[in-house]
Image 1 (cartoon, rainbow, N blue to C red):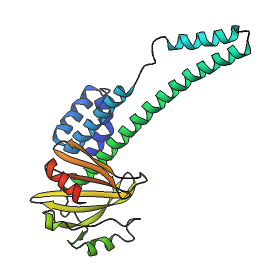
Image 2 (image 1 turned 180 degrees about the horizontal axis):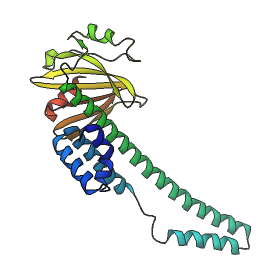
Image 3 (image 1 turned 90 degrees about the vertical axis):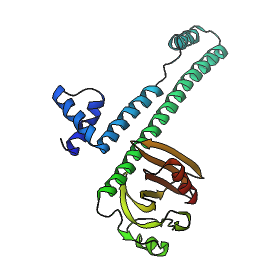
Image 4 (image 1 turned 60 degrees about the vertical axis):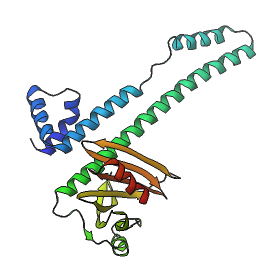
Length: 245
């Protein structure tokens, strides 16, 4: 089975909705393909996060709301009716707020998982190519101007040879449907891809670390830019690179 066919069936495979023959074919493919295995793991993690994000309404809440409405109808004084309506409205508002918070948390988690999959796929794809770069240079004054006209922002380009992370060059990647900058660094025999694009999020956000199938993935925000760094380099040295950038 090819990757294109497997990716269409991975979600159903994780949910155990395939026939026996399809399930066997996808299972055998995942065992031999690290990218599709990562995709399957992402679907499993998202399913767990969605299931974990669901919260049942408190026991008896429906009955309490109905009782409040009934008391309002029977109340003879306008002030009592108004107070009952306010209590019922407050209960409904709290329910809506809780549901909105849960929805936002689930959506944010899904978006992060999707971007993790996108950057990891781009990293692995670059490793199987003859050259993971389109502009080969360790000079930031050469690499940065090369991006002009190729992406809609000016990336920050630093050569970190002095710290043991020489810059090999850069390329343009497509992440989540947009063109982003990818800078390629090296640490001994390890290739590190650093993807970056503008963000609307204000301030600085510390790095979040994830390990997926042996690859360390770091995400952080700084100076109006979102950064994702991916490599099989150990997490400690990946953190050193993040601090330098």
